[in-house]
Image (cartoon, rainbow, N blue to C red):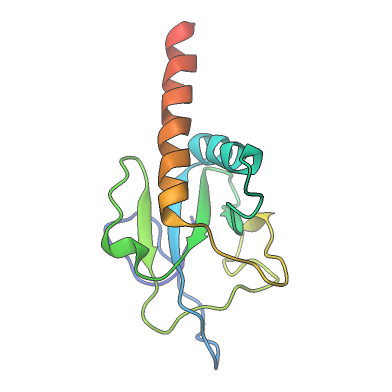
Amino acid sequence: MLHLGRETGSRTTATTPAPADPTPLDLVTVPARQGLEAVDILRRGGDQEAVGPVLHDGACDTLGFLVPPGTADAWDVPGSACTRTDGRGLRIPAEPPVSGSGWLLPPAEDAPVTDPAVLRAALDQAARLIEAADSCC
């Protein structure tokens, strides 16, 4: 499980010590299959910076996309959850912030987070692709 703040109706939450100069972030968690499809969609797009850092849990059951603070307030994508930080914020660390997790896409020096609207569209497209693939066979 990925953990980043306090729970907001999600089965995955996270906590980490607050840095001295925090940058608040939220975390969108999705099943790995849909998340991997979404990452592929985002990376194939014209804007190479469309996807920011992405975490995976140790069992590779879920992926977590770092998104701007406040995303959790309006997140309503079925099959996913958005966890808000507890108000103390989190810097994007070089090492994964959750024990047993890892970076699928590690943060860059000037790592932007994933735009929630772009992520929402990619997750919707990924869900349609998965549904189509599963109904073909």
